[in-house]
Structure formats: structure tokens, C-alpha cells
Length: 424
Image (cartoon, rainbow, N blue to C red; front, side, top):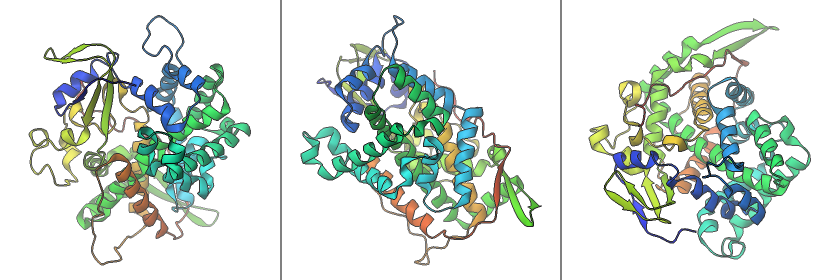
């Protein structure tokens, strides 16, 4: 555990400089240090996770192979399209409870989150994940979150024991093969999937909620989004009923919805990028960062910098991203540099798909007669939970029959291509 200084970087230029030094200023070391504690990995698995990641001597690295697998299976391409198509087919079967539908496309038909108690336990665990990371003896100091984590982990152990992974997405199948090659036990595979679930559930669902919220709460915006999406829908009669086909491969032709998604991420993706300094490093030729120190890069500093975004920087501007291309280091919803989230394409596919389906199929009116912005805190976990609760409430009221839908010509490639200037 690093015991050095703490540096807080509020400058996008300096954040870009950090991104250019991924081995000296490491995010991977952060993962190695904290993942084992968060999900309770065995000491042997923690050692495998940390071994040889920063080495260039050709020795095998479990973590490097794992990241390569995520990039290979969740970047824009046929394998990502397959995973997202499965998710959408699950979504159009019912618009209730989005979480199990999204996780089902990743973990397959034996997805542990089919059990509502497992899903509930995951959110209980997330509620005090920070306590598990920071407090001693979490079984005693964080008993509810600890017990909930163990319940989710046990469900994934059963998942691996029954070889549910064999029917899962390319990502999970690839990760399982890598884990088997390093003799990672089913118990530790299960705990790693508890960690993976954070990205799938705790990040994507809140972003989807805020995108939907800002689409539906402005009647003019909703009308424009609907008009842009409608040409992507065709219909035909099959077996005596009308079947609607949505060409999600053309969703990039809906710039307003995409802009709303990015603006939602700018406003609500208020995480903090964390790095560990692996050796004394002179940052940007000016600042000496000492070995074993922490670096924190709060998204809010970059996402609300008026010199980049201009007035009104605090307002939600649905059309902001239609033509505006901010420097990449000024938008860090998915991190940056070589540590940019490898699952971002899947996340964006899901957000755009959920938002488009709702815009096409339902009318939503606030019970109180006026839209009231949900209060939320800027802490990562708390904002995620607010988004989760709000999304569950939203999907609960959508208990209506949706006419038959088919997913056709699904090729959402390069959703973010050309949106941001490339980072040096």
C-alpha cells in the first residue's frame, strides 16, 4: 500500500501528461492494490493479479492478458455486436428491470443476477464498498455489505461450478480461459466477477437513467429525438402481427441522442481517476512526483471548466456535443489514455439502445405533474445508487405490452469516433 504523498490534479493539461506516463504513473497498480481488498481475493490470486504487469521482459502477465481480452471482445466489431444484440433482444422482451437484462448479455442464460436476491445483494454491497476498502475487519465493521458481497460471490461460484460461463459472452469465455491458464480457482473467478459487475451495473445504469431523464423532461428535445429515431424503424407483418425492426446500426445518425448521452456523462460521471506513482517522475517538466504517492484526478474539475466548455458550463445543454469537440483530457467519463475504459463501446450501446427504445415505445409523465430533478451526491457510489433507484422506479411504471420488435442490421460501430480530439 502506498504511503507517500497525495497529489490532486485539477488541470486537464497535467491530466494529459499523466496519461502519457502509464508505466511510471500507474492505474494498473491501483487495481492490483484495491481489487483484492474490495472483493476478497485469496492471497494467491492477488499475487497472480499483480505479477509482471509492468515488466517488459516477456514474462506472462494475467492482468495484461485479461485487459487484452476485454479490448478484443468489447471494442467495436462483430463480437461486441453479438453481445449487444443479445442484450437488446432481452430488453425488448420486457422493459422491466434492466439490470438482469444487461448482465444476461454478458454472463449468459445462467446469469446469477436472474435471482432478484443476488441483484439486491449486489446493491447492498455497493452501498458501502468504500467501507470495505478503507475500514479494518470489514466482516465486523461493514457487516451488511460484507455479507451481501459474499452472497453475490457464492452465486458466481455456483455459476462456474455449473459451467454457466461456457454459454456466456465472448468476453467471459475469454476471461475464463485466461483464468484457467493461470490456475485461478472458481472462488476467485467469482470474486473477480463481483468486481466486473461494478462496471456493468453501477456505472452504466445511472448513465442510462440520466440520458432518459434529460430526453423525456424536455418536450421539444423528446420530439426531436423521436423524429430522428423514427426513420430507423421499419415494420412488416409476420404470422398475422406487425413486427417492428429497429436498425441500431444507424443510431449514429441520431446526433441529438448521442449528444444527450455525452452531456449526461459530463454532468454525472463524477468519479475520480486514481494513479500510483511507481518511481520518482518529473511531470510536464515541472512537478516532481515522489514514488509511492497517490494521484487523484477529479472529473468534476475537468467537466465543469468554463475555459473549455464555456458558458453556461453548469447548465445541461442537450445539443452541446453535436458540433463541439472538447480536448480528450477535458472529458474523462471513461478515463483517458491507455487506461480508457475498454468496455465503453458496450456501455454506450446499451445507453443509446435503452434511451431509443423508451423514446419510441412509451409516454412518461411525472406523477407530481412537473419534472423534479432527483437530488444526488457527487460521490461515485452514491450517485450510482441514486441512478439505480431511479431507473428501477422508471422501469416499474413501464409495465405495458410492447409490440413485437426485432433487432436488425445491428452494427453500432465507432459510436464515439471523431467526437473528441485525439490525446497526445
